[in-house]
Every structure is written in structure tokens, then in C-alpha cells.
Amino acid sequence: MRRLAFLAATLLSMGSGCSTTHQVALTYRSPANLAPPAGSPIFAVAEVVDQRQKGPNELGGVRSGFGNLLKRLQTSEPVADLVSRALQGALREHGLLADGDEAPRILLRTSITKLDCNSFSYSAPWTGGQVGNREAHAHLDVEALDADTKSLLWKETYAADIFEPAGAAIFEDVDTLRGLVERAMSQAVDRAVADSQVRSQASAGRDS
Image 1 (cartoon, rainbow, N blue to C red):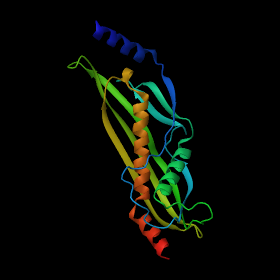
Image 2: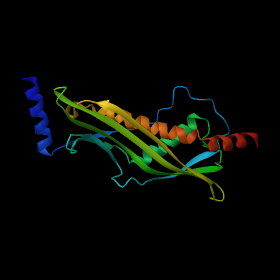
Image 3: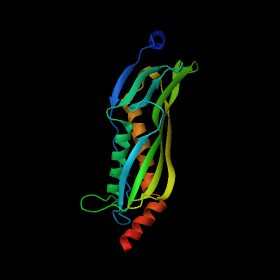
Image 4: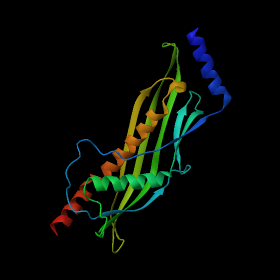
């Protein structure tokens, strides 16, 4: 009886073509083993551009086995603003953000090429239900510019891709998916700030 009810609910959600929209927030989370400041606060965040070829607030969502959206995730602010704030937060946590009266020496200009999350499920007769997976991705193209001349110092891509097993789509927790993409964003941002070129420039600034 329980299996029939599960099947009926699944078919109803898939066949209706309807989806619910959930507004979510993403916040930068610094790693627990954060290293001490490695140099001078000489960096600032310049423009952050969303180049994902989707809506400025779109993240993805929970999808059925047929690929249709059951639960849509959208950010409460444009993704570009959230990534900009995350970069500033990471630089501040690492003691590298030039703010207040300090003039930056290096500007970080960032393009978001991927920042999304999805959960998929499919029928698994051997379990009597559904199984699936959830995933989140954050890919950032970062250019470091001389603050005075605006000349390019270096550019690099930083990415985080996370995959986890999931259960049936109709039971998928939206906050779990939100937390996954938040983790991916934080990891990609941390990789940008921990780059050896960033550390080298910060160390040179401290010694000058």
C-alpha cells in the first residue's frame, strides 16, 4: 500500500508539470582550519560578472527522473552580488582585503561561468522506490589587475564540484541542496584566495 501511494505521488508530481520556487541565501563559510594571515591587505574585489547563460538568480533545483523541475531554487539576490560578497569575505578572513584607509594594489575581476545545483532521481525497482544524486558546481574565472595601471597580472580558473547520493525527488530537502551549492561556492572562493600567486603578492606587499 505504501509503495502504491509513493508511486501515485511521484506520477502526480511528474505529470502536473508544476514546480514550487524556493528563495534561498548563500553565505561564504570559511574553512575550520583557516591559516593565519600570510601577507598585507593589498587586494580589492572589482566587478563580478555572471556569465552562466541563465537568470541572475537561478541556481537549479530538484528534478524528477524525466528531468522536469519539481522544486526550483533561486537566490534572494543576484548571484554576482553573492559571489562578490563571498570574495570580500574570504579576503577579509585571510587578512588580505584592503578596506578602510588602505588603498588596494591589486584588483580581482571575476567571471562566474558556473554556479548551480541539481538533484536527480530515477526509478530503482530493486529498492521498491527511487534513488538519485545531488550535485553542485562553482567555477570562477579570476583576473588579477594592477590597481593603478589596470594591466593584467595573472588569470586563473578556480572550481569546486561536489556530488552526493540522494533519495526520491519528492522527498528531497531544499535546504540540503542549498547547503551543497553554498559549500561549492565557498570552496571555489577559498581556492582563489589561497592561490600561490595571491600569497606571493601579499607577502611581497608585507615586506615592502
